[in-house]
Length: 264
Image (tube, rainbow, N blue to C red; front, top):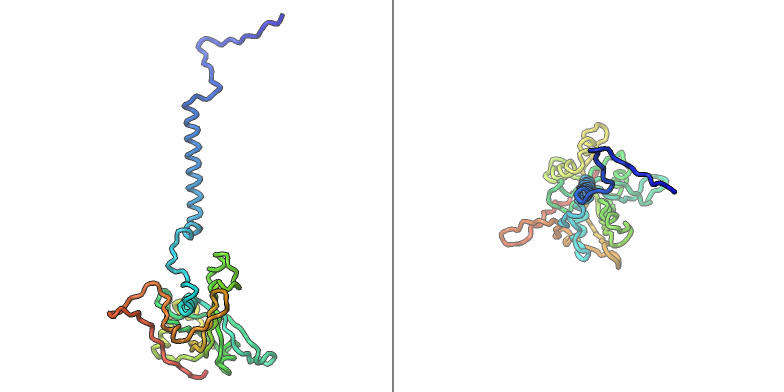
């Protein structure tokens, strides 16, 4: 016969419960909830610091205009542009007459100032673009909505027609120093491109200020091919969201400076 083993506890000895009481379970649940809240808050703060949450809640006050407003789309892209792809006719002996392309910094106004629609830029005869334009000042510039990654960030390939682009053809004209337009263009360039001040001040580089006098504007911002915008419609369009009206309620159109054809 097997005698069962009996365990005895000493007098006054406390028995530790092996199962949590109801009160303990509540504290565990509360601890888990607090931990989850802290982890969620930390994740949100990390996303906020990286700007991802700000993108979700940002307004669309700076969104591109509707694709059917071709003149306004052109003005919008020009005003947003910090640089353009500038095409000229090459004067290099081996490829004379071939298209040549360069990246040129531009500005149509000082940063955060009202759009003018006129592209200003600096050139130097040390660069092939200025040499090309000295012989034949005809050029074409291209701008794309993806220059600030708008299309890429919205899942649109840069070659898709819905990723707006414009081609502006015209002539490059040197602006005479000391004129009001020279001061305006220089201020615009120095505002958007602080490095330009160093270019101008560097001995031997001899940078000079130019502008693009427009002949034709082609806008491709949707399927169906490009649309051509007249210079008059382009200059009358206003991409700015906040516009001060005059006493007659008419929209003020930025004045266009007179054409300058000084040779360089």
